[in-house]
Length: 274
Image 1 (cartoon, rainbow, N blue to C red):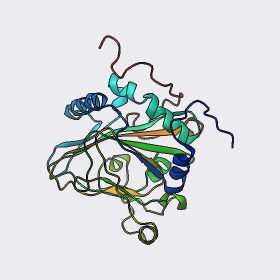
Image 2: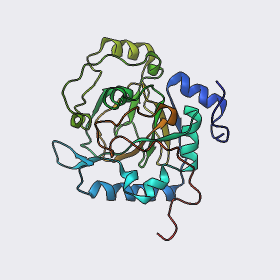
Image 3: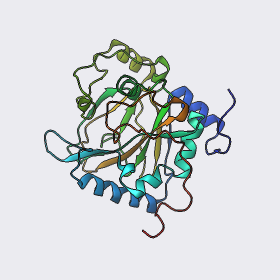
Image 4: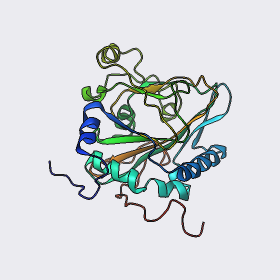
């Protein structure tokens, strides 16, 4: 198929091949330290806001996740259009893209909870009617990610099999927000086979690193056992040609309704006059 996106040449052909084969690529130390600090401070500000978009830990009551911040924060609205980030998303999906989902995810030191094995496309297809697995997520490291503070764990190549059957454990879209996931893969024999066959990887690196992963790759994360917080931005882009056929029953702060192609940001992350 002839590429639709001609102007984004941030990845090599080998990197693109690696992404399609393994279902992920990792880029350490991509963002400038000054930009990471801006993003980290804005993430903390969002976590401090008591809104319906925020989720708290059941045991501690501390906030650990916020959705849809790009709709409420000028900084995050600009960041989803960061030329390097947006350009790579367009290259990997070979299409113009829009934001399907935006999350801030914080695993607090010594207490950040586990996230069970799952596939994002299971949720996006079943709950939002996304037609095809032509979407991806980039995890932006706001803190150093180590083997001890709950890195994302992926099954390399696990996206190639498509969706692993998983029955819904409960009803309602609210159950898609907590770590007691509506669709999880722990009891799947196929998931066990994939891990035995393909192994596991947990990319680690400094703040400003980018981890790109396919919407069908099985992934999860362990508890943060360290004294170091592990905060991520999780930007999920969908191909414009793969937009949802009808409005999702989930709220707009959880599932994007604006399917307009994103254009690259011009200038710095800080908006003029701010």
